[in-house]
Length: 563
Ligand code: HAS
Ligand code: CU
Image (cartoon, rainbow, N blue to C red; front, side):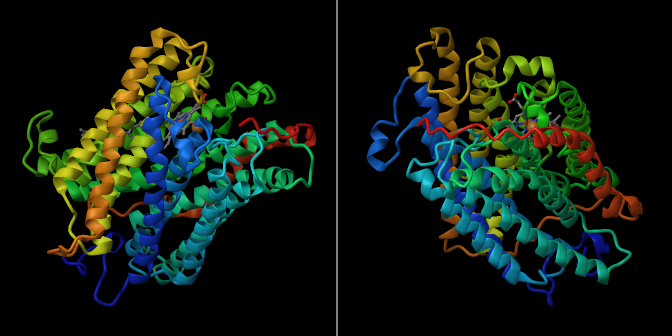
């Protein structure tokens, strides 16, 4: 279908008059920072697994300044789950929102400022981390106390995402003024909901940083209130996981069907799912605090119930994405009950990486429900089960999907052919196998023996020989993941420095709905009611909790530096 003939809400590519060069350049910078961060953080992962089976790697690494296992684990957590995700999402949004609206950013200077602010914040936070002045892990729970630059730097990274968000919203509003009766194009729709959800969600961490941790680390106040800090942290800390997931969902819903040769099964279902994530992502943070003594039990129940409601949009996603893939498989000639699966594009690495990510997410999601059940949470909280869970979610659903996106996006941005499709396919499959081995080992030792997470198990006096086979399984998985990571970087660097230009331009994949004449109802494209419900639910589920904690604020805990 020619661009001009496409229904308006499906357009998503350069037209002769419109240039996206500025936003593409900014997107490229953010993606580069993201990938560098993952390289640094990811390379420590296999080493942690080796420590757990008694191979002590961090002593030799003292020569290059790494002081301890906990410093390594902080670098791993901060670089992977905070920096890689955030910068990739900003890069992907900066690339895809203007294209999807078919309108360049109205004020790219704002995004340029935001990009450099984010990088400045990152460097500021890295300085104390690398000097072993902030080995407080990625959750930075007080009373562990880091150097002030750690908190200030991370705050600036969050502020940079707000500044990006303001620019995207400005561009969207300009588009809306020009198109008052049109439905928001789907890719922009999903990414905008994600960034707005994130904006509301980060009020928690902003409160924690500005109200408690920064003044405390600067010595302006002597003591802090760890319970209030933890609760503010998880106000942001749960929705952050959907901030990481929703860009992958954008790709699964609105891009993958196109790449696979099919159609989006239901546009209405897809739109509803994103609104449900806006409304339900935030008022659930207490499911990370079921074991915290200072939070009233009744509110934990409320958050548990909303968490189960949040399960619904993910199950709807499983159904809709599967149905879209079925349309693709059948369009490609697949027949029978399952024959369409074989007809999916299993030789396209971008597709394969993302489909494998979806499969791993089925197991990560089931584990999430286990976590959210209070009585089961008592068994697995703070055990190795939890890293097992989040490597299937952020480490697979998100990260492997982002790899899949990179396999078309990096060639698109550089204008160079992907260095090696075969290597990319191997990369996706080795990530899949490595993650199955590692997460199975971690889940099982956590569940069966309560083996603690975030511990130097290789030298723990309580470690039992019974754990060893599963630890070895997890370590083999971790090493395979390390090799897979190296394959990814070889391919990306190979592409960036390749001399082979693209033979044909790459278009951003934009899936068309199965029924092209269907116009989604207005209530699925209006911000006001959904934002109102979101704020009301937050006030309901968190209002009394914060009222209680703030009126009884207890600034009594000094800071500790235990590393
Ligand atoms: Fe979680 C802890 C509950 C999802 C990340 N989670 C964590 C932590 C992280 C994390 C990082 O209730 C650790 C934080 C820390 O350091 O302490 N999580 C949930 C629940 C969900 C969930 C209910 N988590 C995620 C996602 C994450 C993530 C997504 C990152 C991206 N999580 C918890 C709880 C804890 C927790 C407690 C605290 C544990 C504790 O005690 O410390 C749900 O959203 C999951 C719903 C998902 C599904 C899966 C749907 C499947 C789909 C794929 C479809 C497949 C297809 C394949 C189409 C039900 C959508 C087709 C295939 C073909 C071949 C055709
Ligand atoms: Cu959560």
